[in-house]
Length: 235
Image 1 (cartoon, rainbow, N blue to C red):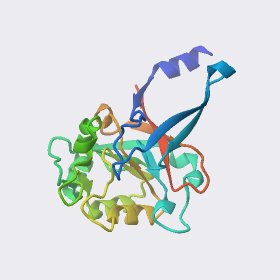
Image 2 (tube, one colour):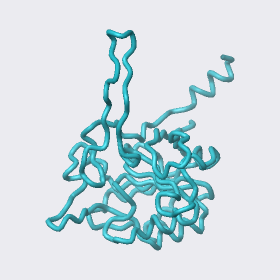
Image 3 (cartoon, rainbow, N blue to C red):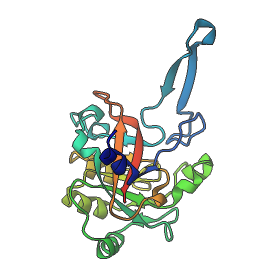
Image 4 (cartoon, helix red, strand yellow):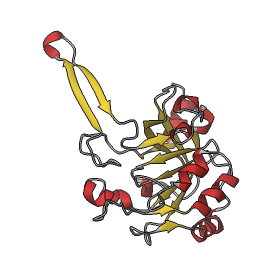
C-alpha cells in the first residue's frame, strides 16, 4: 500500500447502518425470520451451517419485483445505484407512531442542506430504531392487528421520484404503515427504485455529504434480500 493509499483510507470513517441478524429480530408478521442450523460440526473438521430466513428480514432491500410482476430483481440493480450519495432526513425529534414524513419536512431539509441530488439514497431517521431490541414495541400492534410506526407520505414519494433518487431507506419496518395499499411501495418500486427497511444508526450519519454502500447478495430473481448497509464519511 502506498502513502497515497494510506492517506485515502485514513480519511474515511465507516458507519454501521445494519442491524445484526438473530432469531429475535422484529419481522412484519411477528414470526421468527432468521435461523442458523448446524449441518456439520467441528468433529468433522469444519462447521457447516445452513441459513433459513425470510428474504425480507432485518435490514433489507425491496426490489421492484417485490410489488410488480416483471419488475427488476435484486440481482438486476446496478452497482452505480448501490454506492451513492446519502441524504439523511431527521424527523426523530417530532416523529411518533402516527407520524408521516411530509413535504414540509422535505422543504425544510432542502432549505437547510441543499437540493436532493439525483441517484441519492434518501434515509429517513424517525428514531424508531430505538425499539429494535423490543419487537412488540417496534411492531406496535393494536388490538385489531394494525401496526403503528412512523411512515412516509405518498406526496413525498412522488417528489423523491421526480428527484430521480436511487432509493429510499427508513428505520422502520416499512415506509408504508396505515395505508393498506402500500402507496410508497407502489410509487417507488413501480418506477424502478428500491426501498431499504430497518436501517440502524441513522443518527450517526450527517444530513448531507456522506455516502452509502448498500450491498445485497447478487441474487437473481430475488424480490427482497438482506443487505449490509454501510455509511461512508470522507473527511
